[in-house]
Image 1 (cartoon, rainbow, N blue to C red):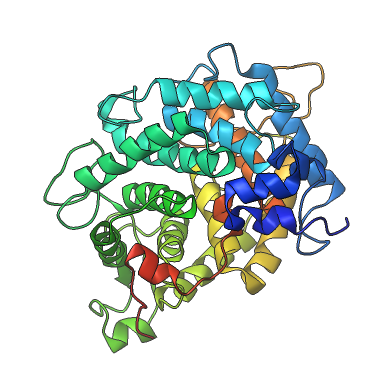
Image 2: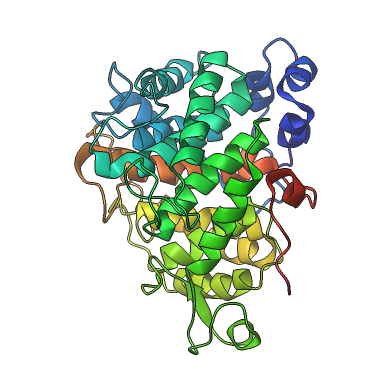
Length: 393
């Protein structure tokens, strides 16, 4: 695998208009056509490229005319669009242009007047909203589409207006004294950072409260309190609600801190150790369609190891990549299954296949670095840009 054009990696940092000009009349799609951009030969293998293409083909083949894969969860539909975007496919252009456009249009057209990106059960308001808003941020950064931009602007205002007094969020789109759990914070954190990457302004007070909320979900395992020396020196992990520590929440906490530029926070290495330990325990099962962990956990684990980088990325990513390749369903005689993965815990049926396949494709496409969220380096000024502060060592 040869190293491809660096322009596609850093192009969006130049701004969409300049990037399009440099790439030529076809804009991003022309640069994407040059192939994936990789930092090293080991990131992408012929097998992972083939698995990614099979997964995208399944998404295209099973999408349906409305663009929603029989799901009314705008977050899941957004993930379907994200799978195509992460592989360099742009709305209305090229091989999967129609498919990614239909998925994005389904999200945008079903946005509520309030900006809320949820038409399913109200108990899933902020899950769907945060995830869909994140995808719209990435899509806007890659297209500059004003329709997407308007929906994103309203979505960001709703995130700010529904933030709870302690810096978290409730499952429903409403302001409360206390947020419910870390899984809701990470959804909104990614939406906010996605917006920052694509030129939107984010209120500093919203980010500062979010950072405080995330740190509040860290639990020292030696009965230490808060940020004191004993907590820093002893073991600990991010939790769902202050009590339940899972690999998903370890990754979610890391992702939140990284998204907000808190790269030196002492909690990050402790949780990365926990993630690496769990990744090393994974066992391959050929062709059963089950993604490593579950789709939700895999989504954040993949991003955590990418954002932290270094040895974590070099050691853990090939394990996840190769397990996805091995687990993918290969049944050419069954078009409804061939090339898919499925979630193993939270979502079932065709929406579960949508969830698993979208996350699987996203993970395999990370080395392409087409998404704005994947192109950002460890820029120190980001802390000031979003209102964060360096965590004391």
